[in-house]
Amino acid sequence: MYPEDYPADGWHNHHIVRRVDGGPDTAENRVLLHPTCHRQVHSQRGPVMFPCPDRGK
Image (cartoon, rainbow, N blue to C red; front, side):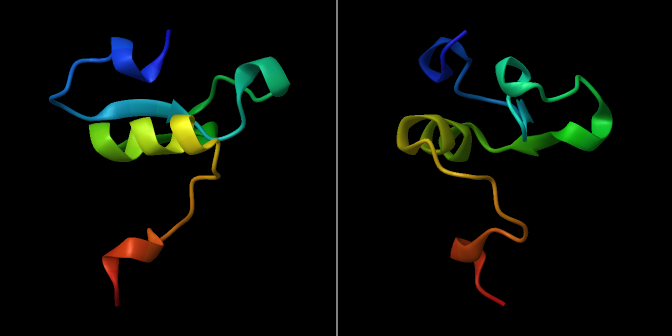
């Protein structure tokens, strides 16, 4: 499934370490992302960072 296949509303469940790269399908390897942020992570192939650097302090 590609990010453009996800609905635009609601939160998206994202694997931090991709399952194809050996990441487990566990709660510790998942994070909920805003739909726009999820598309950005996949389109830019960037890591998920905590806390989000765009949110300020």
